[in-house]
Each structure stands twice: as C-alpha cells, then as structure tokens.
Image (cartoon, rainbow, N blue to C red; front, top):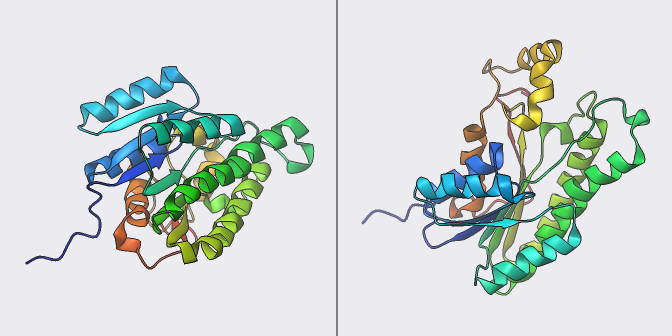
Length: 255
C-alpha cells in the first residue's frame, strides 16, 4: 500500500488573504488543486468576484469575503463570517500587503508609513492571532506569512515596505515559539522579484530590474506559480516538522 501523499489537502480548509490576483490568487489555485477548500479575501467586491469565478471555473470549492487587512474591525468580521460558515482554517496564508510609496525612507509621509505598517504588520498579526485561537482548540494548524527578500535585505526606494517585511519575519519567529506547544506551525515565504502588478514599478525601472536579475543564477524573474508550490508545501503535512523558518524563493539571488 502506498504511503499517504503529504501534499494532499483533501478535506482541509485554507484561508488566503489578498488573493484577488498575483501571488495570492496563484496560491489559492494551487491549494485547491491539492484538494483544499479555500476562502479568499480582497479589499473590493469588484475585484474579489472575478477571482472567485475564476477559481470556481477551475473546479475549486471557494468562498470570497471582502476584507481590508488594515482594518481591525474588518478582520473581526472576516472571522465571524468564517465561524458562521463552520470554516475553521487548517492553514492560513497571510498574503495581503501594500506599498503606496517609493522613495527615501527619510522622506516618507507619516500617513503612508502608518498605512504600510497597519496592513503589512499589524493586520498580519491580527489575522494570525484570530486564526491561531481557532486552531489551538484542535492542537494543529499552519500559518504562512508572505514576506519578501526585502525583509532580509532592504531594497532601495522601498524602505518602509522593507521595514514592514523585516518586522513580519520577527513576528513569524515569535509566534512560532509561542504557538509551537499548541501544535501550530508558523513560517514565512520570502519571494524575490515576481511579475505581478504589485511589483510593476521595479519592472518599469529597467536599470533596477537589470541590477536585480544580474544577481539571480536562474537568470529570470519569478512568476506567481513559482511561489504557489512553496505555499502548498508549508500549508501541508509535507512540512510537519518545520516551524519558525523563512523559505526564500528568489531563483538563487541570495546564494
């Protein structure tokens, strides 16, 4: 008899935040292909609905919920709705993030700084905390933060974003220690340059793009699907003995 497939997510429920496009949507597709029932969030209904329709057309069992990760009340409502649907997540991929500005960190407007931290760090904590409280009752679960290589090595012009992702990695390690005894694993993915609308400014700056790619042994930038498989790994039993770790997915740029 063949051993069970550790990547099989049949019967599992997974929440993916910020999943209307790009990496988040690719992750939701990959999880669904492995058998998971998924719930996805997005800030706006008009972008959330097409993503849900796309996933359902591909055979996914999915629900979409409007939620702004920078709003604590909306995060509370998100989990209230999941509770009402008897959707206790086995895994959560916290992907929602923002970066409204580029430029020197010393010149950043305070409102922009606060917005970045509210979404990328505080909102991530509140989402993880709400999920962990529900996972703890079952003594199992996986929380995956979508960080960035910017959190390991700051990217010029993206100072506030880099700080938020560095702090996110610290949050991940702290939660891994705290939640391990409850059977909850906490890890992070750190993508390199991936072709998404979120990263379009780096693609438009040809000098910056060439500088990044020149340091990537695989010689190319990433695609959302390059990140999705790693998310499946961390959400599944295949990574059952891994917690507190950052998995860098950047084509070898930090070798």
